[in-house]
Image 1 (cartoon, rainbow, N blue to C red):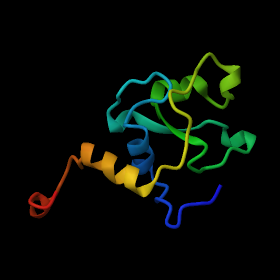
Image 2 (cartoon, one colour):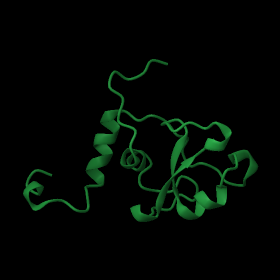
Image 3 (cartoon, rainbow, N blue to C red):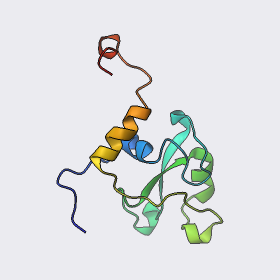
Image 4 (spheres, rainbow, N blue to C red):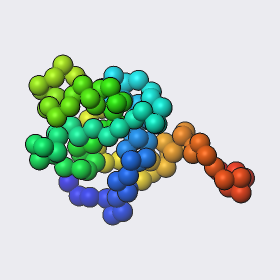
Amino acid sequence: MPTAPHPPAFTRRNVYLRDGFACQYCTQPTPTALLTYDHVIPVCRQGRNDWSNIVTACKSCNGKKGSRLLKDTDMKLRTAPYMPSRFELHQKARMYPPKELHADWKDYV
């Protein structure tokens, strides 16, 4: 599968945007302060830190899964991890504007 000419930056916010700021296990929208990354294939099992292996999880579900594989738990993913397009992330970002925006930028956002 060819890669996008300019793939989106792999950042915590972009993963959260892709996943709709919701835990991919319990599917509950979660405040950003309580969200974490989860490696579907844990790092201790050679899981990579990339779009195809990281999902958004609440701290509770992340702790419950721990370093196990999904097949070794009773947990299921709402959506499999994937690399979104830059366009998809831009569209989703409009639904989740920054909480703390400098006053000078309010007219432009």
